[in-house]
Amino acid sequence: MRILSELSWLWETLGIALAAAAVCIACAALICKAAKKKLSKKVLAAIGAAAFVGAILSVILIARTPMPL
Image 1 (tube, rainbow, N blue to C red):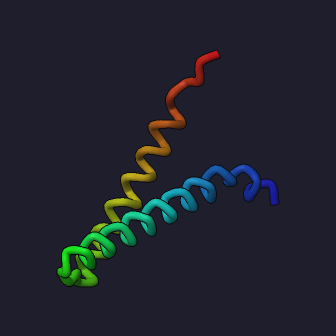
Image 2: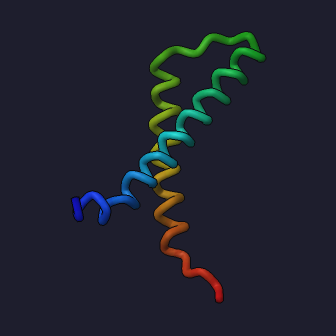
């Protein structure tokens, strides 16, 4: 049980990254719907993967930045 509490930051990071990826996919789908273009599932998967990686990298960079006092 102790190891789960020590890895709570991992679950939070994964949750943030998944939420960001879902928002990016939804925005891309809405933009293409407004432009009356059709997106393939491969393109949506690529957008989701890129958003997921980008969100994880941004969380890591934000976590490394010290907070001002």
